[in-house]
Image (cartoon, rainbow, N blue to C red; front, side, top):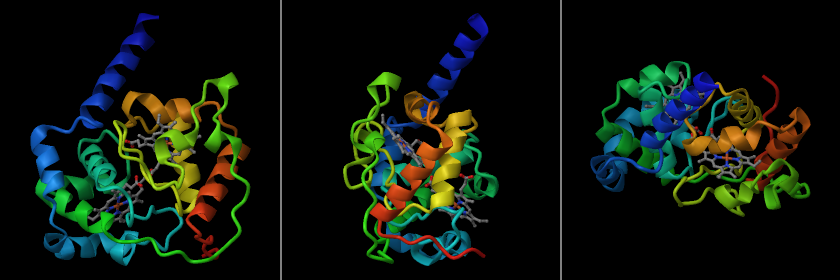
Length: 218
Ligand code: HEC
Ligand code: HEC
């Protein structure tokens, strides 16, 4: 038992140095991020994430309307290989922390425009009540009732309007444990007992909550 316990402890330690507890210097950089300074570097990001952070590729997340603190943490995590994002890791390594702070200030200040006024499917029980039998907290507790994220010790991201395939892939990577950058393993715990059907229903609900329609197949 010592092996797995030790490994778990180390992962937790790695996660908690990155999440919530940014260094004082990083917090200052984040607070002082200047969107005007990011216009140039943001052009590169726009090739994949869309101009102004609204992605038109279902497998690439929107950056628009994400809390700056969440985006900042992800860039730090990619740069330090705490999260595997393919080419994102190299992209993040090329940025200074000052660049990161400016970029996230820019994207956090842009809106995710609604694309369609679709009727919202009924809220999945997992969102509002969780599941006590499986010891699951409601998604709402951390991601907010409007799905726009919540500023607390976890600074959970916005889910409303998230492209469905990206949402499903993110949940799968937490479930399988290939994504381990969530502080206190909150998302690995949230995802590990969910079925494929449950994940899909959650993805459909959150996409509709942002009034975004799925893109046509390419
Ligand atoms: C070559 C395409 C590409 C470019 C260029 C790119 N990204 Fe990404 N980015 C991605 C992909 C794909 C992901 C999802 C990674 C994953 O989860 O596997 C991602 C994820 C992210 C995330 C995490 C978002 C979330 O919801 O967790 C952030 C933040 C991010 N990118 C910021 C940036 C910034 C800032 C730039 C410009 C400096 C940039 N990206 C340039 C493809 C790109
Ligand atoms: C205890 C708080 C907490 C609960 C409960 C929770 N989450 Fe999360 N979630 C987070 C945090 C924090 C992150 C960001 C982790 C990181 O730093 O990368 C996250 C990330 C995510 C992501 C990835 C977002 C992205 O842009 O890559 C998805 C999708 C997600 N959560 C869905 C859910 C769903 C669906 C539920 C309910 C079944 C849920 N979460 C419950 C805190 C929580």
